[in-house]
Structures are given as structure tokens and as C-alpha cells.
Length: 145
Image (cartoon, rainbow, N blue to C red; front, top):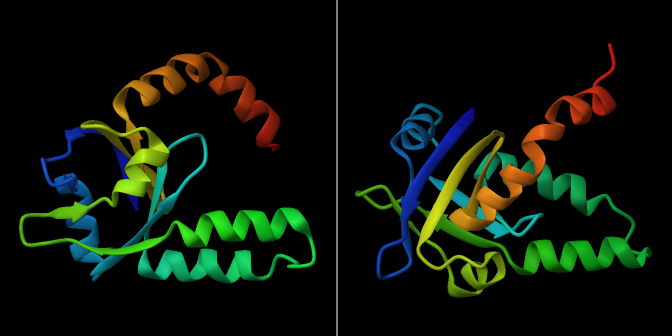
């Protein structure tokens, strides 16, 4: 659903213009609101409402008697913020989430199929630079025929 890499900048009020291709997908799928939360690898995760509900259902099924489950759910859900896209295609990124991801102004917005990730542009460059050469090895380890 969401694909590609798009470099953008936050405005002075901390708003991000969602890439036009992502806005087109949202419009085509009648997505009116998103949920943004702490992601993994120092980025932010953005889910459509339907995908958020699917993730919530999956994570709610983790046993709350396990310490790791409680910690993950606390950090993941406590960090979540419902956001809507305004008429100019902007979403407001809360300060605490920008701080978590080390985002100041310039970001890389990437589509990862069922979610959008928002990265500080320098952190994305570092991640990509470190991982691009292991792409084939990762595929070999994860995907079996």
C-alpha cells in the first residue's frame, strides 16, 4: 500500500506534509486518520486506522504476565497519537515523538507496505548505509522457498 522513500522537512509548527503518493493511497482507501507512535530502530511508525486496529489486536494478545510484553505495550501504546491530515496534506508530529526519533527538521518518509516510517534524515542515511550490503543475506535468512 505505502512504498518508496521521500525526503521532506517539518515546518516551524512540527507538521509534516505527507508525500503526495501516500495521500493518494489514503484517499483511495478512505483513510481519514492515522496513528503515529514510537517505532523500532529510532524511527516513528505511522499506521492507518485499520492497520492500527490489527496491530493493537495482535499486541493485546501478548501475555500481560510477561514483563517484556508489558514493557513493549506500555512504550508502544503510551507513545501513540491519533493524527488527521489537514487540507494541505500535513500531519502534526508531537514533540515527544520527534524527540524519541531525534527528528529536528529534515526527515525521510518511507513506505513499508502496511505502515509508514518517519526517520531523521541522517539516521536513515546511517541505517541504510549500514544495512544495504546485507540485504541479500537478510533475505536468505528470512525467506525460504
